[in-house]
Amino acid sequence: MKVTQVADPILPLCQRLLPCRLAGLSLALLKATALEFAILAGHLLLYPAGIVQERRCQPGRLPAPHGATQLPTDSKPPVVLLHGFIDNRSVFVLLRRNLAQHGRQRVESLNYSPLTCDIRTAAELLGRHIEEICERTDSRQVDVVGHSLGGLIARYYVQRLGGDLRVRTLVTLGTPHSGTRVAPLANAHPIVRQMRPGSELIEELSRPAPGCRTQFVSFWSDLDHLMDPLESACIDHPDLRVENVQVSGIGHLALPVHPAVATGIRQALDTARPGDPSVARADGLTVA
Image (cartoon, rainbow, N blue to C red; front, side, top):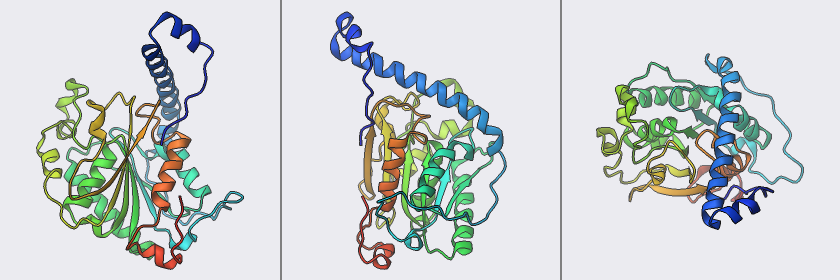
């Protein structure tokens, strides 16, 4: 999936002044940076509303868009959204609305404490939340979407704590699966140290995981300023079923917000797979 680039009247002038490839890269970086600042400003306004955990209630049903072909709503497992480092559930306001408008009525955003200092502890807490969600919604499995650190927490739960029994599909957005070297001054925080290449936790995730039942879909951006190297947001593990999806032209903060990425997330969650119990209930219907 590629995020479509919008034509810009400044581009011809840049191409005359700079080599074509450099001009295009510089302009794309400028646009992505401007978008990141705009998203950050909007998110700061929404942040206070997402500090407390959301109320656990069944949302009302929204009509599907005209002409949309979907799996029956009852066949879709709940979706759990997990935010990144020093963030909260408000980052998923637009994604949650997008999912609901396309038939995902059971969507829950979880907050973990900003004082969390260990990914393993956060993964155990996530597991307890997911068990509670499955019991409350009478569901055998859930789908999880994790942004940045949230994706790493969810992966640890799936891969190291037996969460593959509960998580059907794990979608990660800009998650440092191989560790990132960005912001070395932040090493004072233990979670940042756990997200470094070669850390004990990253090494733990590289260990064998035979028979892991979860499908992984990792979205990574070619302009993600928090991934160093950029490919650290890809999953490379011989025992995991993985699809790495490159997104072009947007940065780290835009991943859970951009409509093109939301479309890709829906496709990842709605694609029927062999052995998926929802396929049988939907008579084999596959949604792309």
